[in-house]
Image 1: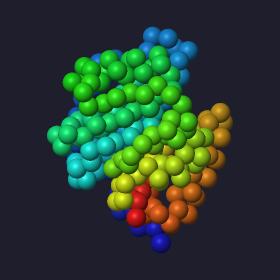
Image 2: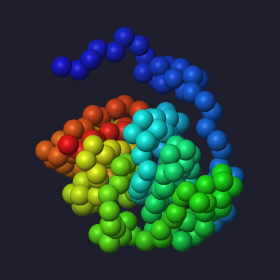
Image 3: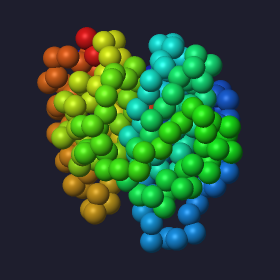
Image 4: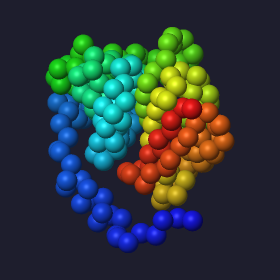
Length: 213
């Protein structure tokens, strides 16, 4: 049974945002070349959740899939740095990665965050070791094909954070309906994986937090 809401959700989210510390802005927030497609990044509340999970788990090895302009990589890097953690962020487009590196350097995180320019679906097959936290915010069609490998890469009790998991119930443009179907299949995949304990949260475009058994 769903928990009944005793408040207006948009008003509640606006109130929560007013309570959070304002996020640090990126030095470069736009790319002049408008032909380059930029993936949306996690929102303010989701960023706060990610920051908290890294700090609570004292996570030292983090994988960020979908660097975009570097916002999530900076959030992860700031949270991981006090415990000597490091972040590996994967971005498929070298032009976007250059801007992300500029933002990461301006945030003083060049020694904490590394950007790998590669197709994430292929790159994760070559990674060694385990990660305490993985943020999945890459191409939506790749979410489900990558899931089992990401589970393998998680250390026991590690967290997999998945963004945009409410696409199936959002009013997306017709051009993005394929993403909604892909994310629905992914959510069903999260639900069916016995190695994961998952909760879905109505934050931003939807966040799923999965812990590996």
